[in-house]
Amino acid sequence: MMKMSKIELGALMFLVLAGIETFGFNIYHQNSGRLSSKVIESPLHNRASQQSLFSSSVPTPSVDNAVKGEGALPQPPKAWVPIASLMELDPKRPTPVQFMGRKYVVWLSKEGWKVFDDMCPHRLAPLSEGRIETTTGNLQCAYHGWEFGCGGGCARVPQAHNEAAARAGCPAVPSYQVVEEKGLVWFWPFAGVAPAAGEAPTPAELLDGVRIGSTYTRDLPYGYDVLVENLLDAAHIPFAHHGMQGTRADALPINATLAAGAGAAGFTADLEDRSMRSRRRHRQAFRAPWVVNYSGTTELDPEMMTKKDKKKKDLTGTFNLCVTCIPTAPGRSRAIVTQTPSKILGKFPRWLVHALSGRFLDSDLAFLHYQEKALRRPPVAAAAAAAALASGKDKITGKFYMPIQSDISVAAFRKWYEEHGWGSALSRDPMELDMPRSALFDRYEQHTSHCVECQKGMKLMSKIKKFSLITGMLSFLASKFLALRLIACLAALSYLGAQKMNTFFYAQDYKHYES
Image (tube, rainbow, N blue to C red; front, side, top):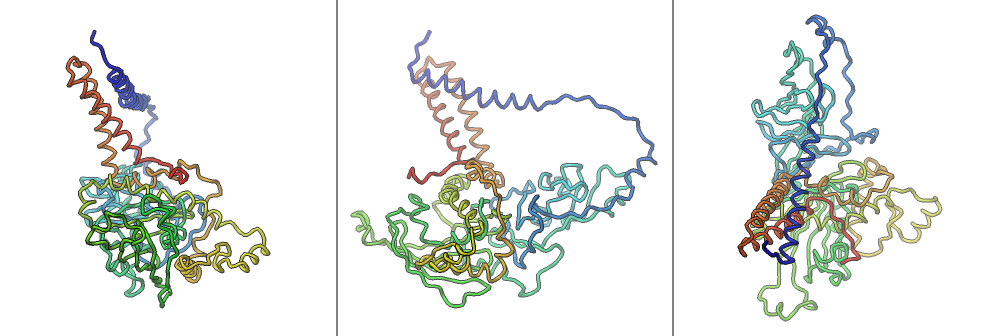
């Protein structure tokens, strides 16, 4: 019998166990899903009795397109809403989305992208669980196969004896006007109503000057107001994103000036700070109600230059960031982070860029979730609230203490938020129960499940794992040759690499005390 080294024996044992996990586990689940059942036949009724049953007068239910348990929903604002990124939507599937507690489905019709209420008028099943019928191009409900056309009207009722009558009496699925602008899908949140000229800023106006090369969408476990104020807060970057966008050593007093003209349309501020050892001079713009945009220049700080830096001819650069932010539900929001076109990032698959980008939002996710819970909690007593205001805490929340220049944009946003009705509309208590950390950092539900690029990445990792296992096992069967033994060891390493990469598509905790 041929002798094996400890490394080779370990690789063989690993491949066997990995094979059981990869193939055996899947086979178990496939077989467990094969349920045998007997067809129980009931006496057939005649056609007349069937007609009377299905044509009986049943009142149409009042359908409220709302997330369960949220009660009365606030009226949507008269504004174009950036609901999804074309770079992440799968054109072959209907994708569920939310906005202000309401559920919608985004899908690609023969006429272009559509946004419908995510509810079939037949039996109220979510249309996002359905499919796009390839022969007709209609949106098909997976429950009974009813189909709906580009305008939301019922196009097919497979089980009806008088299909024309059934279609004619079926309420149309509410559909919304859609605009595609710079790779994002925007919709007007009032079914059957077009915006009047000048009624709201257009998507083109909100994204004026923004160049988008790629996007990363994330559904976050904290509210819209917390998301926006965090993006406007330049002071948190050296600490919350230590090791990713600079380090804690970058922290210094920030010069911030609020530009004149703040109002319903938003505001701008000029800032000077330091990040990644570079001094930044940039303009920060809040384009109400959804867009936070940064643009500016960077120059390496002489105090932090190394010998290699001093040999460089150009120590300057540019800085751009644009994020669209929408409220999806109480205590929940969606961020679409856009990146300018990049030759370097363009060489990598988008799923890899997304997998690595998730860490950035992970790093401040937990404390923003808990900050919001504290913000929503009412003061213990009126006297305590009065004392808080007297001690210098801001007059908007009665809870924040913001005495420094770097908080100027947060204070301006809080003022806008309350003065223009958003506070009363959105500042409702999120869930009382604390979410487990596994749910807080669940990248699969927050991003991967609705990103076509990351779905491709997951499938690729699955193929690599299976190929590595098969290659490794076959190499061991003929392992009298040294080269084949080495191939088996490399196959084991390849499997481990794919397994590690796969974890980036799921939950990954973030602990600041480890960095």
